[in-house]
Length: 99
Image (cartoon, rainbow, N blue to C red; front, side, top):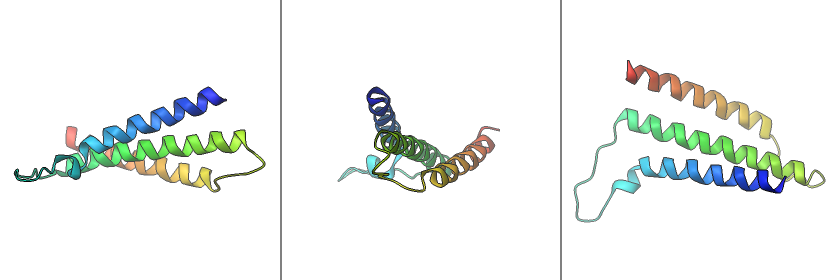
């Protein structure tokens, strides 16, 4: 169980880092021209942030399983369903950009 928790946390951090590379703040440098973010880039950012959210949700679920007497987080299943629906919607919008 401990290794699963560590792997899930590492997955969350990796996905979060992918999203950060796409964030507008990542591109802004003092004294340099900014970059305009396209709708596709915003959708890619949303996709990676949502995937990171799903991984964090699964991490919390693993912690709840490890400490069932504490139930550290509630409504994880509803949140997971919401995130999965959001991810599906975002991926559908991204497919439109590829065609």
